[in-house]
Image (cartoon, rainbow, N blue to C red; front, top):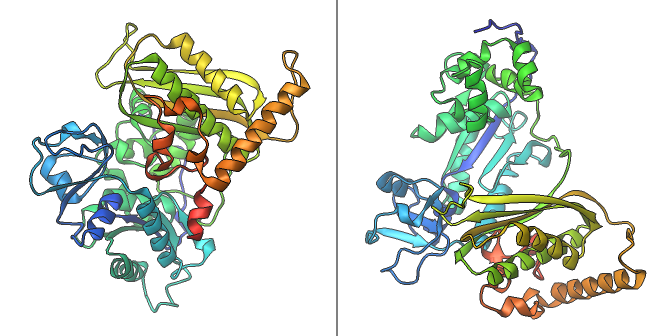
Length: 457
Protein backbone atom coordinates (compact mmCIF):
# COMPACT_ATOMS: atom_id res chain seq x y z
CA UNK A 1 0.00 0.00 0.00
CA UNK A 2 1.31 3.42 -0.96
CA UNK A 3 1.37 6.19 1.62
CA UNK A 4 -0.75 9.25 0.97
CA UNK A 5 1.03 11.93 -1.05
CA UNK A 6 -1.69 14.58 -0.96
CA UNK A 7 -2.98 16.24 2.21
CA UNK A 8 -6.09 18.40 2.57
CA UNK A 9 -6.35 21.41 4.90
CA UNK A 10 -9.91 21.40 6.26
CA UNK A 11 -9.59 25.02 7.41
CA UNK A 12 -9.49 26.00 3.75
CA UNK A 13 -12.39 23.80 2.65
CA UNK A 14 -16.05 24.96 2.40
CA UNK A 15 -17.79 24.52 5.75
CA UNK A 16 -21.56 24.96 5.52
CA UNK A 17 -24.63 23.58 7.27
CA UNK A 18 -25.95 21.19 4.63
CA UNK A 19 -28.89 18.84 5.12
CA UNK A 20 -29.60 15.76 3.01
CA UNK A 21 -33.25 14.89 3.62
CA UNK A 22 -34.80 11.55 2.71
CA UNK A 23 -38.52 10.79 2.80
CA UNK A 24 -38.54 7.41 4.52
CA UNK A 25 -39.81 4.61 2.20
CA UNK A 26 -41.51 7.34 0.21
CA UNK A 27 -43.94 5.51 -2.09
CA UNK A 28 -44.94 3.08 0.66
CA UNK A 29 -45.34 5.93 3.13
CA UNK A 30 -47.61 7.83 0.73
CA UNK A 31 -49.84 4.77 0.40
CA UNK A 32 -49.92 4.26 4.17
CA UNK A 33 -50.88 7.89 4.83
CA UNK A 34 -53.66 7.72 2.24
CA UNK A 35 -55.06 4.74 4.18
CA UNK A 36 -54.70 6.53 7.56
CA UNK A 37 -52.05 4.01 8.61
CA UNK A 38 -48.73 4.54 10.34
CA UNK A 39 -45.93 4.30 7.71
CA UNK A 40 -43.52 2.93 10.31
CA UNK A 41 -45.68 0.10 11.63
CA UNK A 42 -47.80 -1.08 8.69
CA UNK A 43 -46.65 -3.93 6.46
CA UNK A 44 -47.13 -2.54 2.96
CA UNK A 45 -45.47 -2.91 -0.42
CA UNK A 46 -46.02 -0.99 -3.64
CA UNK A 47 -45.99 -3.52 -6.47
CA UNK A 48 -46.34 -3.09 -10.21
CA UNK A 49 -48.82 -5.47 -11.85
CA UNK A 50 -50.28 -7.01 -8.69
CA UNK A 51 -52.88 -9.67 -9.41
CA UNK A 52 -56.54 -8.83 -8.84
CA UNK A 53 -56.92 -12.38 -7.57
CA UNK A 54 -55.48 -12.82 -4.06
CA UNK A 55 -54.89 -16.47 -4.91
CA UNK A 56 -52.29 -15.47 -7.52
CA UNK A 57 -48.85 -14.01 -6.93
CA UNK A 58 -48.91 -11.40 -9.67
CA UNK A 59 -45.78 -10.74 -11.70
CA UNK A 60 -44.61 -7.30 -10.73
CA UNK A 61 -41.64 -5.56 -9.20
CA UNK A 62 -41.73 -4.30 -5.63
CA UNK A 63 -41.12 -0.58 -6.07
CA UNK A 64 -41.20 0.31 -2.38
CA UNK A 65 -41.62 -1.40 0.96
CA UNK A 66 -42.49 -0.05 4.38
CA UNK A 67 -39.84 -0.53 7.10
CA UNK A 68 -41.93 -3.24 8.77
CA UNK A 69 -42.43 -5.12 5.49
CA UNK A 70 -38.68 -5.07 4.84
CA UNK A 71 -38.01 -6.37 8.32
CA UNK A 72 -40.73 -9.05 8.26
CA UNK A 73 -40.03 -10.48 4.80
CA UNK A 74 -36.34 -9.65 4.34
CA UNK A 75 -37.02 -7.70 1.13
CA UNK A 76 -35.71 -4.50 -0.40
CA UNK A 77 -36.89 -2.00 -2.97
CA UNK A 78 -35.47 -4.17 -5.75
CA UNK A 79 -37.46 -7.29 -4.97
CA UNK A 80 -40.16 -9.12 -6.93
CA UNK A 81 -43.52 -10.63 -6.12
CA UNK A 82 -41.94 -14.06 -5.72
CA UNK A 83 -39.81 -12.74 -2.83
CA UNK A 84 -42.91 -12.34 -0.67
CA UNK A 85 -44.35 -15.26 1.30
CA UNK A 86 -47.27 -16.89 -0.51
CA UNK A 87 -50.15 -17.15 0.11
CA UNK A 88 -49.82 -13.50 1.10
CA UNK A 89 -50.08 -12.83 4.86
CA UNK A 90 -53.37 -11.30 5.98
CA UNK A 91 -51.66 -8.25 7.46
CA UNK A 92 -49.74 -7.43 4.27
CA UNK A 93 -51.11 -4.64 2.09
CA UNK A 94 -50.16 -4.77 -1.60
CA UNK A 95 -50.73 -1.43 -3.30
CA UNK A 96 -50.50 -0.75 -7.05
CA UNK A 97 -48.35 2.32 -7.81
CA UNK A 98 -50.00 5.74 -8.06
CA UNK A 99 -47.29 7.99 -9.48
CA UNK A 100 -49.48 11.09 -9.69
CA UNK A 101 -50.07 10.83 -5.94
CA UNK A 102 -46.35 10.48 -5.24
CA UNK A 103 -45.44 13.42 -7.48
CA UNK A 104 -48.10 15.57 -5.82
CA UNK A 105 -46.74 14.69 -2.38
CA UNK A 106 -43.19 15.28 -3.62
CA UNK A 107 -44.08 18.82 -4.70
CA UNK A 108 -45.88 19.48 -1.42
CA UNK A 109 -42.88 18.41 0.64
CA UNK A 110 -40.42 20.45 -1.40
CA UNK A 111 -42.71 23.46 -1.01
CA UNK A 112 -42.32 22.97 2.76
CA UNK A 113 -38.53 22.86 2.37
CA UNK A 114 -38.71 26.20 0.53
CA UNK A 115 -40.20 27.82 3.62
CA UNK A 116 -36.82 27.22 5.30
CA UNK A 117 -34.45 28.20 2.45
CA UNK A 118 -34.55 30.21 -0.77
CA UNK A 119 -34.29 28.68 -4.24
CA UNK A 120 -30.53 29.18 -4.32
CA UNK A 121 -30.07 26.83 -1.38
CA UNK A 122 -32.16 23.84 -2.38
CA UNK A 123 -31.32 21.00 -4.74
CA UNK A 124 -33.76 18.19 -5.49
CA UNK A 125 -31.61 15.06 -5.77
CA UNK A 126 -34.41 12.56 -6.47
CA UNK A 127 -38.11 12.08 -5.87
CA UNK A 128 -37.42 11.28 -2.20
CA UNK A 129 -34.14 13.09 -1.45
CA UNK A 130 -33.38 16.81 -1.30
CA UNK A 131 -30.34 18.86 -0.25
CA UNK A 132 -30.77 22.09 1.71
CA UNK A 133 -28.06 24.59 2.68
CA UNK A 134 -29.44 26.08 5.89
CA UNK A 135 -26.32 28.05 6.88
CA UNK A 136 -28.09 31.39 6.50
CA UNK A 137 -31.40 30.15 7.92
CA UNK A 138 -30.37 29.24 11.46
CA UNK A 139 -30.63 32.71 12.98
CA UNK A 140 -33.92 33.44 11.22
CA UNK A 141 -35.55 30.39 12.82
CA UNK A 142 -33.88 30.94 16.19
CA UNK A 143 -31.71 27.84 15.96
CA UNK A 144 -28.18 27.57 17.28
CA UNK A 145 -27.32 24.48 15.27
CA UNK A 146 -28.29 22.74 12.04
CA UNK A 147 -29.41 19.80 14.18
CA UNK A 148 -32.10 21.97 15.80
CA UNK A 149 -33.36 23.25 12.46
CA UNK A 150 -33.39 19.70 11.04
CA UNK A 151 -35.77 18.72 13.85
CA UNK A 152 -38.10 21.64 13.01
CA UNK A 153 -38.18 20.52 9.38
CA UNK A 154 -38.97 16.93 10.36
CA UNK A 155 -41.85 18.08 12.55
CA UNK A 156 -43.36 20.38 9.93
CA UNK A 157 -43.19 17.78 7.14
CA UNK A 158 -44.81 15.16 9.37
CA UNK A 159 -47.55 17.48 10.62
CA UNK A 160 -48.51 18.61 7.12
CA UNK A 161 -48.06 15.36 5.17
CA UNK A 162 -47.79 12.44 7.61
CA UNK A 163 -44.42 11.50 6.05
CA UNK A 164 -41.38 10.73 8.21
CA UNK A 165 -38.03 12.11 7.10
CA UNK A 166 -34.46 11.13 7.90
CA UNK A 167 -31.75 13.79 7.73
CA UNK A 168 -27.99 13.74 7.30
CA UNK A 169 -26.07 16.87 8.29
CA UNK A 170 -22.60 17.80 7.11
CA UNK A 171 -20.11 20.50 6.18
CA UNK A 172 -20.82 19.75 2.51
CA UNK A 173 -23.29 17.71 0.41
CA UNK A 174 -21.04 14.61 0.44
CA UNK A 175 -20.75 14.41 4.22
CA UNK A 176 -24.48 15.10 4.60
CA UNK A 177 -25.30 12.28 2.16
CA UNK A 178 -22.93 9.84 3.86
CA UNK A 179 -24.36 10.72 7.27
CA UNK A 180 -27.85 10.04 5.92
CA UNK A 181 -27.05 6.70 4.30
CA UNK A 182 -24.77 5.28 6.98
CA UNK A 183 -26.12 6.56 10.28
CA UNK A 184 -29.29 8.65 10.40
CA UNK A 185 -31.43 5.89 8.87
CA UNK A 186 -30.45 3.71 11.84
CA UNK A 187 -30.91 6.32 14.60
CA UNK A 188 -34.16 6.61 16.55
CA UNK A 189 -34.29 10.38 16.02
CA UNK A 190 -33.62 9.82 12.29
CA UNK A 191 -30.80 12.37 12.24
CA UNK A 192 -27.00 12.16 12.10
CA UNK A 193 -24.23 14.73 11.74
CA UNK A 194 -20.86 14.13 10.07
CA UNK A 195 -18.31 16.95 10.07
CA UNK A 196 -14.67 17.13 8.99
CA UNK A 197 -13.70 16.13 12.54
CA UNK A 198 -15.64 12.89 12.07
CA UNK A 199 -13.87 11.72 8.91
CA UNK A 200 -11.36 9.44 10.61
CA UNK A 201 -13.80 7.88 13.11
CA UNK A 202 -16.92 7.65 10.96
CA UNK A 203 -16.20 7.96 7.25
CA UNK A 204 -13.11 5.72 7.31
CA UNK A 205 -15.00 3.09 9.31
CA UNK A 206 -17.79 2.54 6.77
CA UNK A 207 -18.03 -1.26 6.74
CA UNK A 208 -18.75 -1.97 3.07
CA UNK A 209 -16.88 0.11 0.51
CA UNK A 210 -19.99 0.10 -1.71
CA UNK A 211 -21.87 1.98 1.05
CA UNK A 212 -19.74 4.95 0.05
CA UNK A 213 -21.31 7.40 -2.41
CA UNK A 214 -20.04 6.81 -5.96
CA UNK A 215 -18.65 3.29 -5.46
CA UNK A 216 -20.60 0.44 -7.04
CA UNK A 217 -19.68 -3.19 -7.58
CA UNK A 218 -17.62 -2.50 -10.72
CA UNK A 219 -15.63 0.31 -9.10
CA UNK A 220 -15.14 -1.90 -6.06
CA UNK A 221 -13.51 -4.57 -8.27
CA UNK A 222 -11.14 -2.01 -9.78
CA UNK A 223 -10.17 -0.71 -6.35
CA UNK A 224 -9.72 -4.23 -4.97
CA UNK A 225 -7.37 -5.00 -7.86
CA UNK A 226 -5.23 -2.09 -6.64
CA UNK A 227 -5.19 -3.41 -3.08
CA UNK A 228 -7.87 -0.99 -1.85
CA UNK A 229 -10.54 -2.72 0.24
CA UNK A 230 -11.76 -0.04 2.66
CA UNK A 231 -12.37 3.70 2.67
CA UNK A 232 -9.40 4.01 5.01
CA UNK A 233 -7.27 2.24 2.38
CA UNK A 234 -8.61 4.61 -0.26
CA UNK A 235 -7.71 7.68 1.79
CA UNK A 236 -4.15 6.43 2.29
CA UNK A 237 -3.32 5.15 -1.16
CA UNK A 238 -0.99 7.07 -3.46
CA UNK A 239 -3.06 9.85 -5.02
CA UNK A 240 -1.00 10.08 -8.19
CA UNK A 241 -1.05 6.33 -8.80
CA UNK A 242 -4.82 6.25 -8.25
CA UNK A 243 -5.35 9.15 -10.66
CA UNK A 244 -3.13 7.49 -13.25
CA UNK A 245 -5.10 4.23 -13.00
CA UNK A 246 -8.62 5.69 -12.85
CA UNK A 247 -8.32 9.23 -14.20
CA UNK A 248 -10.58 12.00 -12.90
CA UNK A 249 -12.79 9.46 -11.13
CA UNK A 250 -9.80 8.25 -9.12
CA UNK A 251 -8.93 11.80 -8.09
CA UNK A 252 -12.52 12.43 -7.05
CA UNK A 253 -12.75 9.22 -5.03
CA UNK A 254 -9.53 10.10 -3.23
CA UNK A 255 -10.88 13.53 -2.27
CA UNK A 256 -14.21 12.02 -1.20
CA UNK A 257 -12.37 9.54 1.04
CA UNK A 258 -11.12 12.58 2.96
CA UNK A 259 -14.64 14.07 3.10
CA UNK A 260 -13.79 16.74 0.53
CA UNK A 261 -16.61 18.05 -1.66
CA UNK A 262 -16.35 21.56 -3.12
CA UNK A 263 -19.75 21.67 -4.78
CA UNK A 264 -22.50 23.92 -3.52
CA UNK A 265 -26.19 23.08 -3.25
CA UNK A 266 -27.33 25.85 -5.59
CA UNK A 267 -24.95 25.00 -8.42
CA UNK A 268 -26.45 24.01 -11.76
CA UNK A 269 -25.03 20.86 -13.30
CA UNK A 270 -24.62 20.85 -17.05
CA UNK A 271 -24.24 17.33 -18.45
CA UNK A 272 -21.56 16.79 -21.10
CA UNK A 273 -24.01 15.11 -23.41
CA UNK A 274 -27.73 14.60 -23.15
CA UNK A 275 -29.71 11.54 -24.06
CA UNK A 276 -33.39 10.79 -24.13
CA UNK A 277 -35.01 7.42 -23.73
CA UNK A 278 -37.72 5.20 -22.40
CA UNK A 279 -37.83 1.72 -20.90
CA UNK A 280 -40.50 -0.56 -19.58
CA UNK A 281 -40.97 -3.84 -17.78
CA UNK A 282 -43.61 -5.70 -19.75
CA UNK A 283 -46.70 -6.86 -17.89
CA UNK A 284 -45.98 -10.47 -18.93
CA UNK A 285 -43.45 -12.56 -20.82
CA UNK A 286 -43.56 -11.79 -24.56
CA UNK A 287 -42.82 -14.80 -26.75
CA UNK A 288 -44.44 -13.65 -30.00
CA UNK A 289 -42.27 -11.71 -32.45
CA UNK A 290 -45.23 -9.79 -33.91
CA UNK A 291 -46.27 -8.56 -30.46
CA UNK A 292 -42.73 -7.42 -29.70
CA UNK A 293 -42.60 -5.51 -32.99
CA UNK A 294 -45.67 -3.58 -31.89
CA UNK A 295 -44.07 -2.58 -28.58
CA UNK A 296 -40.78 -1.57 -30.21
CA UNK A 297 -42.63 0.60 -32.75
CA UNK A 298 -44.71 2.20 -29.99
CA UNK A 299 -41.58 3.07 -28.01
CA UNK A 300 -39.94 4.51 -31.10
CA UNK A 301 -43.01 6.70 -31.58
CA UNK A 302 -42.88 7.87 -27.98
CA UNK A 303 -39.22 8.92 -27.94
CA UNK A 304 -39.68 10.62 -31.33
CA UNK A 305 -42.62 12.57 -29.92
CA UNK A 306 -40.51 13.68 -26.97
CA UNK A 307 -37.69 14.71 -29.30
CA UNK A 308 -40.06 16.90 -31.29
CA UNK A 309 -41.48 18.41 -28.12
CA UNK A 310 -37.95 19.42 -27.06
CA UNK A 311 -37.07 20.54 -30.59
CA UNK A 312 -34.28 17.98 -30.80
CA UNK A 313 -33.04 15.41 -33.29
CA UNK A 314 -30.96 12.31 -32.68
CA UNK A 315 -28.03 10.80 -34.55
CA UNK A 316 -27.70 7.66 -32.45
CA UNK A 317 -30.34 5.12 -31.42
CA UNK A 318 -29.97 2.07 -29.21
CA UNK A 319 -32.32 -0.78 -28.39
CA UNK A 320 -32.02 -2.89 -25.25
CA UNK A 321 -33.87 -6.18 -24.88
CA UNK A 322 -33.93 -7.95 -21.50
CA UNK A 323 -35.04 -11.55 -21.33
CA UNK A 324 -37.45 -13.08 -18.86
CA UNK A 325 -36.03 -13.94 -15.44
CA UNK A 326 -34.02 -17.16 -15.68
CA UNK A 327 -33.94 -17.19 -19.50
CA UNK A 328 -30.46 -17.44 -21.03
CA UNK A 329 -29.87 -17.55 -24.78
CA UNK A 330 -27.48 -19.82 -26.67
CA UNK A 331 -24.67 -17.32 -26.09
CA UNK A 332 -25.17 -17.42 -22.33
CA UNK A 333 -26.63 -13.90 -22.25
CA UNK A 334 -29.70 -12.53 -20.48
CA UNK A 335 -30.40 -9.87 -23.11
CA UNK A 336 -28.84 -7.79 -25.86
CA UNK A 337 -28.19 -4.11 -26.50
CA UNK A 338 -27.21 -2.60 -29.85
CA UNK A 339 -26.69 0.93 -31.11
CA UNK A 340 -26.78 2.41 -34.62
CA UNK A 341 -25.86 5.78 -36.07
CA UNK A 342 -28.45 7.45 -38.32
CA UNK A 343 -29.10 10.72 -40.11
CA UNK A 344 -30.28 13.36 -37.62
CA UNK A 345 -34.04 12.89 -37.21
CA UNK A 346 -37.03 13.14 -34.89
CA UNK A 347 -39.37 11.29 -37.23
CA UNK A 348 -41.44 8.57 -35.60
CA UNK A 349 -41.20 6.42 -38.73
CA UNK A 350 -37.43 6.71 -39.15
CA UNK A 351 -36.70 6.06 -35.50
CA UNK A 352 -39.08 3.12 -35.29
CA UNK A 353 -37.68 1.65 -38.50
CA UNK A 354 -34.13 1.93 -37.16
CA UNK A 355 -35.14 0.20 -33.93
CA UNK A 356 -36.89 -2.58 -35.83
CA UNK A 357 -33.81 -3.15 -37.98
CA UNK A 358 -31.84 -3.83 -34.79
CA UNK A 359 -34.65 -6.01 -33.48
CA UNK A 360 -34.90 -8.10 -36.67
CA UNK A 361 -31.14 -8.66 -36.75
CA UNK A 362 -30.69 -9.84 -33.16
CA UNK A 363 -34.05 -11.25 -32.04
CA UNK A 364 -34.39 -15.02 -32.35
CA UNK A 365 -37.44 -16.30 -30.43
CA UNK A 366 -36.08 -15.24 -27.03
CA UNK A 367 -38.58 -14.71 -24.20
CA UNK A 368 -38.64 -10.98 -23.44
CA UNK A 369 -39.67 -9.04 -20.32
CA UNK A 370 -37.81 -5.71 -20.58
CA UNK A 371 -37.38 -3.25 -23.45
CA UNK A 372 -35.44 0.02 -23.49
CA UNK A 373 -34.84 2.67 -26.14
CA UNK A 374 -32.27 5.49 -25.97
CA UNK A 375 -31.58 8.40 -28.33
CA UNK A 376 -28.21 10.13 -27.96
CA UNK A 377 -25.99 12.57 -29.86
CA UNK A 378 -28.86 15.05 -29.73
CA UNK A 379 -28.83 18.32 -31.60
CA UNK A 380 -31.20 21.24 -31.94
CA UNK A 381 -33.72 20.78 -34.73
CA UNK A 382 -32.90 23.71 -37.03
CA UNK A 383 -33.00 22.35 -40.55
CA UNK A 384 -33.67 19.08 -42.33
CA UNK A 385 -30.74 17.07 -43.67
CA UNK A 386 -31.65 15.42 -46.98
CA UNK A 387 -30.13 12.24 -48.33
CA UNK A 388 -29.97 10.62 -51.77
CA UNK A 389 -32.76 8.17 -51.04
CA UNK A 390 -35.49 10.67 -50.17
CA UNK A 391 -37.11 13.50 -52.07
CA UNK A 392 -37.98 16.84 -50.52
CA UNK A 393 -41.66 15.99 -50.96
CA UNK A 394 -41.26 12.75 -49.00
CA UNK A 395 -39.50 14.51 -46.13
CA UNK A 396 -42.05 17.33 -46.03
CA UNK A 397 -44.91 14.84 -46.05
CA UNK A 398 -43.40 12.95 -43.11
CA UNK A 399 -42.81 16.19 -41.16
CA UNK A 400 -46.37 17.36 -41.81
CA UNK A 401 -47.74 13.99 -40.71
CA UNK A 402 -45.81 14.11 -37.42
CA UNK A 403 -46.93 17.68 -36.82
CA UNK A 404 -50.58 16.73 -37.22
CA UNK A 405 -50.17 13.72 -34.93
CA UNK A 406 -48.52 15.84 -32.21
CA UNK A 407 -51.17 18.55 -32.49
CA UNK A 408 -54.09 16.15 -32.10
CA UNK A 409 -52.51 14.29 -29.20
CA UNK A 410 -51.66 17.49 -27.39
CA UNK A 411 -55.20 18.78 -27.70
CA UNK A 412 -57.24 15.61 -27.19
CA UNK A 413 -54.88 13.14 -25.50
CA UNK A 414 -52.83 10.23 -26.73
CA UNK A 415 -55.61 7.65 -26.88
CA UNK A 416 -57.60 9.72 -29.40
CA UNK A 417 -55.08 8.91 -32.11
CA UNK A 418 -53.05 5.69 -32.03
CA UNK A 419 -51.53 3.43 -34.64
CA UNK A 420 -53.82 0.55 -35.56
CA UNK A 421 -51.18 -1.93 -34.40
CA UNK A 422 -51.54 -0.63 -30.84
CA UNK A 423 -55.07 -2.05 -30.81
CA UNK A 424 -53.74 -5.55 -31.44
CA UNK A 425 -52.75 -8.10 -28.82
CA UNK A 426 -49.44 -7.12 -27.28
CA UNK A 427 -49.89 -3.36 -27.75
CA UNK A 428 -48.89 -1.40 -24.67
CA UNK A 429 -49.17 2.25 -25.64
CA UNK A 430 -52.82 2.75 -24.74
CA UNK A 431 -52.45 1.16 -21.32
CA UNK A 432 -49.25 3.10 -20.65
CA UNK A 433 -50.88 6.41 -21.62
CA UNK A 434 -52.12 6.60 -18.03
CA UNK A 435 -48.67 6.05 -16.56
CA UNK A 436 -46.10 8.35 -14.98
CA UNK A 437 -42.51 7.14 -15.09
CA UNK A 438 -43.77 3.77 -16.29
CA UNK A 439 -46.23 3.35 -13.43
CA UNK A 440 -49.88 4.18 -12.83
CA UNK A 441 -50.45 7.88 -13.40
CA UNK A 442 -49.68 9.43 -16.91
CA UNK A 443 -47.22 9.16 -19.84
CA UNK A 444 -44.96 12.20 -20.13
CA UNK A 445 -44.03 13.12 -23.66
CA UNK A 446 -46.75 11.25 -25.52
CA UNK A 447 -50.09 12.06 -23.92
CA UNK A 448 -51.90 15.37 -23.91
CA UNK A 449 -50.48 16.35 -20.54
CA UNK A 450 -46.84 16.74 -19.68
CA UNK A 451 -45.21 17.28 -16.33
CA UNK A 452 -45.51 21.06 -16.61
CA UNK A 453 -49.24 20.74 -17.14
CA UNK A 454 -49.53 18.58 -14.05
CA UNK A 455 -47.75 21.15 -11.93
CA UNK A 456 -50.44 23.68 -12.81
CA UNK A 457 -53.22 21.47 -11.47
